Image (cartoon, rainbow, N blue to C red):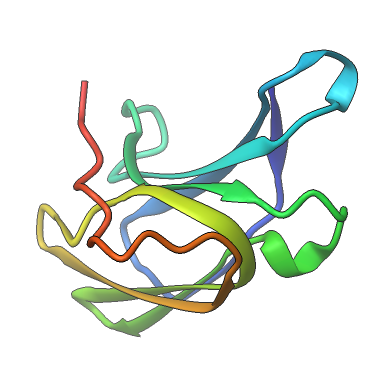
Amino acid sequence: MSVIAASLSGVPGHIFRVRQTTCAGIGKGPSEISVLVAKAKWQDRDLVLKYIRVSDGSRDAEPVITSVDDRTVRIYVKYISSIICRTSRWGPLNFQYEFGVVAHPDNALPPECLQD
């Protein structure tokens, strides 16, 4: 498991972390990207988006997280393989998602991410 950088701007009072998990040993096979959010630095983080990244090593599969306003967060990913889950609302925050290309789309709306 590794943490990759995510672009983040102006979401006051919230901390985002992007985690990449490789499903197979020694970095082979598809990687899952998880976007997590917390209200405080030491608080447990909750999952808001999980997807399978394209395996071409491109930075186009990394999320860009920006603030639309003080209650809305936009998460943009240019190119992904498929969406596992996404959360539309977390506490006072609403999430807007924009995906450039989904290589293996499922016609159904992805399920909400389950919280521990």
